Image 1 (cartoon, rainbow, N blue to C red):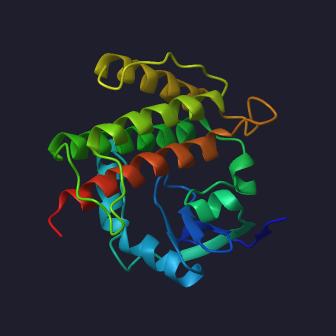
Image 2: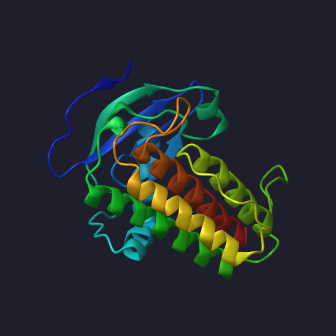
Length: 228
């Protein structure tokens, strides 16, 4: 069972997912603002460091984001036991708080932030070279393969909300836009806090997971586009 405590005013509510190797820190009210580290302190440090990189997401969504690097006060609302998914490198555990009912305004705000994540991803992809710098062990997908991977993942994520998206070619921008519209609509209407199925996701967790995945790859492309 997760442990919980109230978050003070003017702080960023965070959930920590603690695996054996990695800890993920996720800002519950800012879908996609999520970073990992080898331990709680490093995860929170990474989350703070990425505030300037998250700011364009909020700007694209039309949501005020008053935090800069180092000035966000984090309040740990829940601590979750991680899994193999956590240690593989993905936040895989929904928080208890993500089962709460959403107002229409909050659902719209979260969906807008997911759209902001897509806008940042698209801008990064448009500026990136087709061939990305390889990692220290020579691995990593190139730009177009990452775009295809993100689209395939979103098809799987949509099913967690009870939505089946048509499979489209990776270079079909119109089909990708239609798929995003369908996923956006599902996020806006899934407000009860009850998953669509026994293995489904709540809207809050779905927004967090979708935006995290999009931004994690956007930031990867940015970092791997730069000269070593």
